[in-house]
Image (cartoon, rainbow, N blue to C red):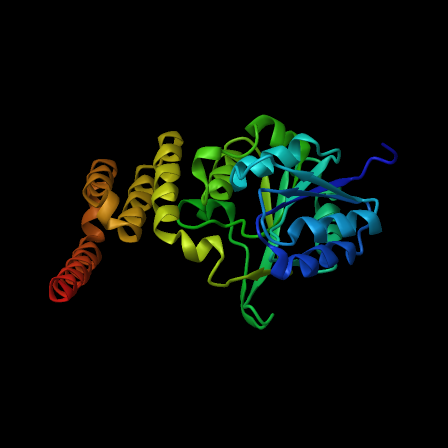
Length: 295
């Protein structure tokens, strides 16, 4: 199939025509040229396929595949990586933008340290009009119990994909967080504090539309990974963080696990937990009252 690229970049696409051209153009504009872009259409019914086919004809580094039906983001990613040829892997969304130096900067970091397996950078949040609202710096991987430190700009070696066997299709919406949590058990990861990516927030984005479901899946991932942690205080803090993020689904169970892990840490956070519980009760009462009035 000709020259083998250094970087394989997967772009899952589902009805992404509105921002798709800008996303693809940002990859073509990279100052690192040894890449292949694998676009995988996941059952779009808009003009996404037409747009992708046009770019395939314009740039031989772009490849296009179509799922027979909509199978979701993590499964679509796995389809893309199954045909990837590069030794370095990454993926991007059909509504986001790579800054021109992203691939070159991340690839240089990996090439400079053969013991490094995953590198990730910072990103800026933009809206529908491409207006930047804030910069999100990458966090140390040790913070993974309390947030997703990797974010949206990342590059990793092929062996990461192979060892982890791709993305978990049961964790749609939290597949990336789960991937990094599993990766942290096996591989070396390093952040670089540089703005390399534009991450778009809009009403149709998954982060907005599935927020409650994503929080629940994240909790399941953290709970699973904590079984590998010996630090009892860290376990307690992580459990309590989950309580504060999703009390309704996991509050009492996680509070008990925190207490068993470290009673001292749990009691130290008790005022905050009580205040949070009172807020939950207040909001649920208001919602119940409003529903009663409407009926």
